[in-house]
Image (cartoon, rainbow over all chains, first blue to last red; front, side):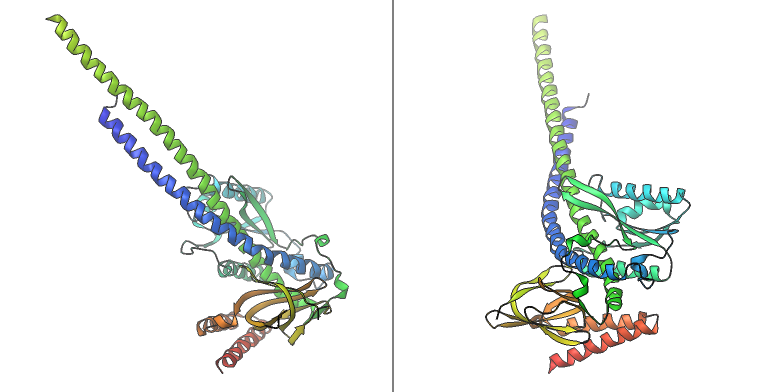
Length: 292
Length: 133
C-alpha cells in the first residue's frame, strides 16, 4: 500500500507528463498546418509536370531510343528502395508502419532471389531497418538539421539516385512514404519511380501531334525525367512531413487523454486512502476512549 | 486584344496565375513572346527573365532557372525550378546559382553533359553582368 506522499508524487509526475504531451500536441498541430500548406503548394507543379510528361511519353514509348529512366533497363534484378521516415519518434505507429511495408517488400524481393539496396531518408527508418538489412543499406540521408523541407533537399536525393541509376547500380526504384489523408489517417505507400509510371493520358486534353518542340522531344524528355524523379521524392517528403505531424498529433492527444484518466484514478485512490486513514484514526481514538 | 491564361509554378508554390496579354519566355533556342492563340509548343528554358504583361499594360519580370514552357489551347504554363521576382534578385542568389552550375560542370561525366553544364554556367554569368549594368 503506497503512502499518501507516494500517491501525491505520482499524481504530480503524471500531471507534468500530461503538460508535456499537451504542449507537443499543440506544436504538432501548428506544424501540421504549415506542412499541409507546403504539400498543397507543391501540387500544381506535380500536376503540370505529369501532364507534360504524359504528352511526351506517348510519342517515345515503344521506340528503341526511349530513355532508360522511362523504359527501364529491361531487367528487374536489382531493386532500390528509398525509405522515407521521420527524424523523431513519439508519433504513434508512423515510422514503424512505413518500415514494416518496406521490410515486407524487401523480404519478398529477397525471397525471389533479387538484390535489394536501400536508401533511408530519416533517422528512424534507418534505426528500424539497419538491424535486419545493415548490409543492404547503401546510403543514409540525414535531414535532422532541416527544419522545413525544400526542393533542394529532395533534389540532392534525386541526383544521387540518378547517378546510381546511370552507373547501373539498380534497375527498379521504389519510394516508401506515408500518404496524408487526414489527421487520423495516413497510409504507408510504395511508389515506383524508376521506370517512371506514366499518368493516364485521358486526364490531358490536346493531342501531341499539334505540338512543336524546342529543342526536340528527346532532349526535353532527357531533362524532364530526372527532374520528375526529384519532384516525386519532394512530393513524398512533403506528404511524409504532413503525415508525421498528423500522426504525432493524434498520438499525443491519446497520451494526454490517458494521462487524464490516470490522474483521475490516482486522485480517487489518494482520496480513498486518506479517508480510510482518518476513519482508522477515529476508530482508534473511540475504542481507546471506550476501553477506559 | 484578348488575354490568355498564364501560370508560373515552381516546386514550392504557384508563383503566378492569372490572365495576361503577353509573356516573353527565355527558351533554349532564344527568347519568344507568347500572345493569345499561340501555336502549341513545348520548350525547354534557359536561365533568364520572364516578362509578364498583364491586361492593364503593367509588366513584371521574374528570374527563372531550369524548366519548361508549355503552350496549349488552355494557355501557357511555365514549370521552373526557381522563380524569383527580378526586384528580389541579389548577388547572393547569383553566387549560389553560379556555385551550383560550377559544381555541375565539375561533376559532369560525359562530354555532352559537361557541354550542357558549361553553357548554363556561361548563361548565368552573362545574366549577372547584364543585371549589374
